[in-house]
Amino acid sequence: MKAPASATSSAADEHGAQRRLDAYSYLSAPERLEHVAIMRVFCRTLLADLSVPEVMGKLLQAGAPAAGLDADTLTVRLEQLVRWGNLLRSSHTVKASSISEYQRSRARYQLSKLGERIQRDADGVLAEADAAREVSNELLALVERGLRELAELVTAPGGIEPQDGLERVSTLFVQFTEFADSIRDFYAYLGQVLARYDLDSTEYQGFKELLLDYVEAITEDVAFRAPRISAALDTLWPHIPGLLARLDAHTQGLAGLPPQGDGRLETRVQRSRGREVADWEGLRGWFSNTDGQGSQVDQLRDATLRALQSLLANAKRMLRSATGEISRRRDLLRLARWFDEAAPQDAHDIAVAAFGLYGARHLGIPPATDEVVPAYTSWWTGPVVEVPVALRERGSRAQRGRTSTVEDHSAQKQRLRTAASEQAAARAAAADELRSASERFAEVRLTSAALGLLLELLATALGNAQLRRRADTDGKDATKFDLDQAQSEDAELGIRLTVRRTAGARCVLHSVDGDLLLDDLELNVGRTSSTPADNDAEVSAS
Image 1 (spheres, one colour):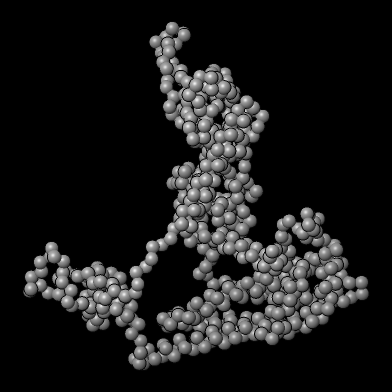
Image 2 (cartoon, one colour):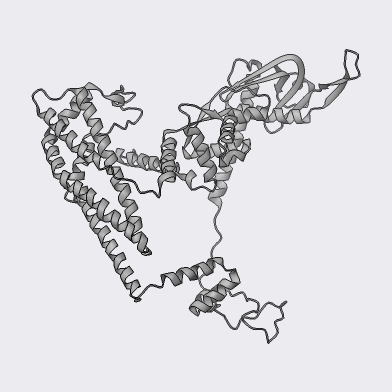
């Protein structure tokens, strides 16, 4: 039975939202300072992919917290960022002098769109999180003038020129977005300041002037221009669909890409502000009550009233404090400083002296058998006795509830067996691929699993190799070494690898992960066998 399209779309939206939320994980991970330093390296580049050594070099140049990471640890950090969706893996042909260097350098990474946007926002928050942002009040006058001029041009005979209309709409929404963002940031800062009830007289005087002068100027300007902007939008509103259609006919941007496959765009396009009816509805809802829930101008007026009430509450508190009615604030701050500077035992003594609260004592529990406590030992300095959980929580030692059943792990065991079977099948397929491609290594491209198995056998064979000393032919006393035949095999997969050193030989292995060149080496791949006839069936690849 096929699932409804709405259910499929909802599941896809939930999966996409979860994937985008996972991209924020690096900001709260224990290694967040290292992750942020790595992301800043990638944000300094455009359309560039970097390998592990290149990232290490840029971290050392910047003196970032991650500059001391080695190649293996840095690779782990980069792979974690790939799993979170902040980075993308890029394929690249690599030249390496050793197998370990090849395995480290074959992976290159580039910045994803979501990762770049999150890191840019994070840097902005880290740089200006506690600063008070000025409200771009002059932009409101520009928005009013732009709407009036746009309404006059649209309603004129012949309408507005498409290019002129596109420029005016883009400018209008850039100005409005900047103004709305500055309003939200300023009132968020004002809210966190007025929520404090520990303002002294100097701080109170400064914030009082800020509220009464600056906020008053903002609200008066908004209240003055909001009706004018609403009137211009009412005049312009019936012409919005025609205006947007005319602009789209003039230039569609990325939305004009030809459809692919089933008629849908393969890539989602986020249009510029002002090119959709929803953008105009948001602009109109900021200044007019269109949905019955109040406009943003009304919310701004209410927020200003609440700010004045908070300021008045602080004023009343300071007056009562001056008359001696309340406020032990200074005493409590001094007590808190004593707690912060005291040792653990001294902190307990301070708490007893300040609040008269003594630690609880449970009677009737004998101490451990190996501890002998004299009768004259004070409970204050005597050893602590372990209290059972049941007695501490319920006041009774009686066992409650039934004995839990043995947990069934059959499902976990079945998953482990399935995973092991799949892994064994993959390795067997890789062994078959190596044996079938051994006569034509230069013509085929190996899979990642086959190349990994070959590198595993090659590392074991080189580890088992024996060096044979031979005299130099030029007659000198120096000696040289030859590599005797080295072998490695996997009896379970039925594959054997023999490595011989041959001067001038070149063995090239092509794979989906890159190309591997082995100089002066010949590889013989065949089946494991105990008979000489089977051993002669091995095939040489060079």
